Every structure is written in structure tokens, then in C-alpha cells.
Length: 232
Image (cartoon, rainbow, N blue to C red; front, side, top):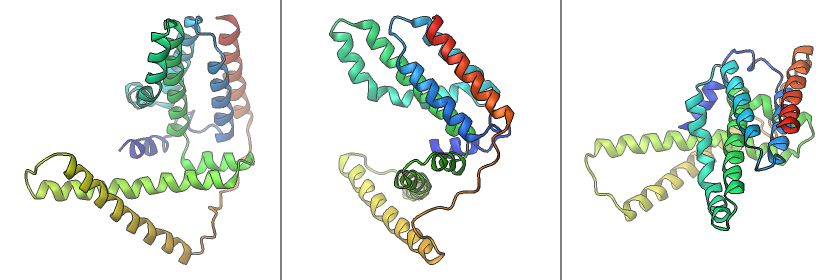
């Protein structure tokens, strides 16, 4: 499961892992803004953005191919718009749309692959992001593990029964069983949380002091992104 691998990545000990989550979030926002405003004709700028992401992945000691493969999952969603733009005669804009989608996904993966969920959601809360949005993110992430475990159990059960027929009806039945069992597990987990004192909010740990090395990291990212945007 992709989220299990990414969660393991986020527990690393590289220099990028040690940077303050607020600095990494701010750097991601700067990168996304600069990337989205880059002209489609500035293809050298997109190459430079890719080089920045490769350097960050090397600093974080993350597998570049693994990051690229997971970031490519966003391409089917943007492919429709890219193809429509291509057919309208603007091939350069279509290419830029695919490049921006891929680079944005890679940058977001670098954040979650170097920062545990509790750390970057605490950073969002310190920025006064709506608490309901943060709570939805936390629940979705945690319940992904519940669904993944249930899928694994159903897969083992199917293997124990031997070869089975395949088709739409079988797939629909498996999805229905998965939904039912996951709902029961999730409901039990929620009531267990209520019994342990959960009152609609995960209490974040107090943020660590923002150090000079974190400020230097953000300043370097800001300067690099602006230099690429303005010069290329």
C-alpha cells in the first residue's frame, strides 16, 4: 500500500526530515505558486524545477523512482485536460499542464515523505487552518490503514479458497464486503476513541522552536524558486 511506504519514509533521519514542518510547508507553497505561474514556453524552467526536486529527494535519501512512480498517479486525472488542450492545437500548453501536475505531485510527496502526519497537521493547525479540514485529513489517513488491513485479510482468504471465477459480479461483491467490514471496524474504532476521551480533536504536540537552520532552508528554497521563475 502506497501510504504505508510513505509513512515509513517519513520516519527517516535525514537533514530534510529534521527541518521544521512549518518551513517545509511554506517551501511547498512557494514552489506550487511559482510552478503554477510559469509560462508553458519556459521548458528550461520545468527542467530546473525537476532538478530541485531530485536534489531534495537525494537530501532526504528517498528513492527517486519510487517518488516518480507515485507522483505519476496524478497524471490520469490531468490527462483529459491535457489531451483536450492538445487537440485544440496548443501542444505546448498541454505538455506544460502534464509537467505541472507531475512536479506538483512529486513536491507534495516529498513533504509527506519527510514529515510524519502528526507533524505537518500540527503545522497546519498553528497556521489557523480550519480544524474540521485537519480532522478530516487525520481520520482519512488513519482509516486507510483499517481498509488496507481488511483488503489484505480478504486477499489471504481468497487465496486459501483456491482459484475463483473473475468478473464484474465478483468484483462488486468483494467491494460490498470490504465496505461492510471496514464500516464495522471503523465504527468500533470510533467508539473506542470516545471511550478513551476523544472529544472531536486530536491534541497536537507543542511545536518545536523555529531554528535558524529552518529559516535558512526556507530562504534557500525561496531564492531558488524565484531565481528559476525570473531567469528562465
